[in-house]
Image (cartoon, rainbow, N blue to C red; front, top):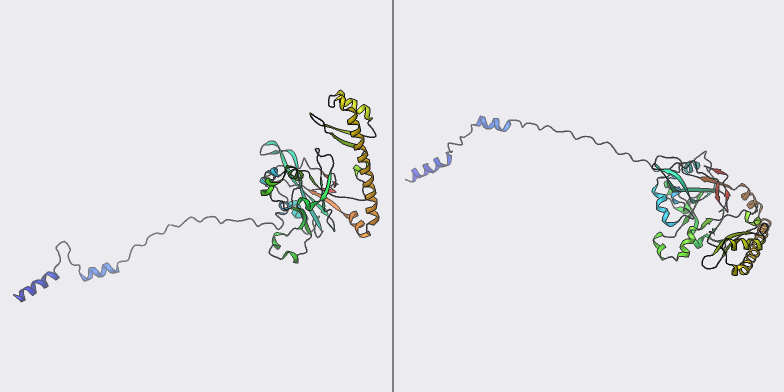
Length: 346
């Protein structure tokens, strides 16, 4: 019985169900060695390589130059347009107008009616003025406006402005003190985020700023002027006018203002005295300006005189490009009342 049981157990282990017949050794060999079908690889579409235009060495030169006198809320509108100042960049290349020269740059903006994006609109056009000089043209800023009775000439540092060296892109990894920069830009360190903390008068001063320049060898047109701007403070509104002490007769001038109902009859004598005082102040200022100019020339070295004689002003406008308005029809050589006209407009 033990033998039978043993055989039965052996029979059960070796048997296979009818639905799963035992494969022969040849079939197993064929099953193992049968090669797998290769899956076809689908080639991925090749993406076009991206090309990034190399930055030009002086590409941000005009952007780094502060646009003096531009209203703070207009700055974003100026920089939103992709202006092209490649003419300024090329001027510093070998063979260019400013190559190898010591140059001081300041910016400004000129509101002009131009065609932009299919319509005529007033656009603040950025301009860069290049002053070729062996020394800074000035360390002062002029502040003037129609609303102000008199101009102010103050150190530019009071308005957080100064001449600083411009470092080209290729040299920005170098130590600044080791570079002998030939390009200096007028920069303002006033943070726009802090403007809300400034008093209104201080804030407005930035809009009335003009880069100041004093040319002792050229008589200022205001030294010769006989006109006096008058802002007579009276209610309900001030009287704005200009009085020429050589061409106007004060009595007749005052009567005309009364006839035009710009001045009340009872204000006549007070107004006349106000004008006389302004004329005395203007004559004194003109006399002092002439004396100061003569003194400056007398004390000037021969080297400084030669520098003033060779000093040149160049005014750069943006060149025509698809992304910006065409400004070729609105170019002007006039810089401001202190610098006068540029020697060349580009």
